[in-house]
Image (cartoon, rainbow, N blue to C red; front, side, top):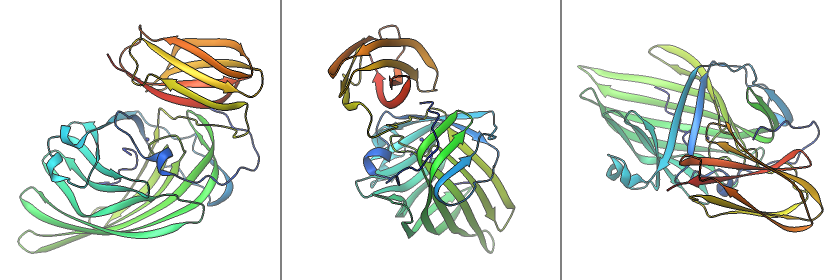
Length: 338
């Protein structure tokens, strides 16, 4: 069983070539928040490519037909929330599957998972990411849990080795994304139990994970999971609803804001420009499908206010893309709730 929670915890931008600054992974840009909805495509394994600066990772051949959705909810709203006292958020993937997380300014931590009747509450939390996390940074972390499965008690202990090993451009079936960071996540763990005699299984999860600031989950990963009982399995996944984030820090936008959030019938979007620009605003739902609502206007230097009628859209998570002169520069996430 693959234990990683990276895509619980998940724009259509074609990036140009060239040298980019080293992205720093930060808590504000990556920690999930309540209400986040992540749509993930499960795919076959592809080569992760090379480590290093200014890489181009071409994962455009990722193929798969299985899509799963997870929603960030309060711990107290889940059936086994009391078993995870350290968690401050939970991911509901449906079918009785939940992941429990502790988010803070310094780390994203795995508190455990529930799959059906199996409850894994971690006595020693697993550090999935440290913040801020910069190119070549690395750390190791130990973690542990005890759980009951099919009447037998299992003791699981593990050690992770996490390295920020590259940054650059990531090409996925959905498009090309710049300022992406890659983390090499190596997870070694073992299960021990007693079923008439002592029984031990060892595991090694060798995983490459791509992050893009502004998304509250990994946007892609590929893994090789090997255990001492059945051998190796491989696979991967990528996020369907990727938020591209700010493309060029030196663009014409000084600031932007969206309110109210959650919204009911109208969203107000403010964009402060430092020069006259052609502005286009597009709305997308959580699956990345455009809603058909588009604003086209010539923006003026200063604060521009746009009122968007969303009364005919169903409740859910949406993304408002801001384009200047035809180029996507930022995306704002909002919720419609009535």
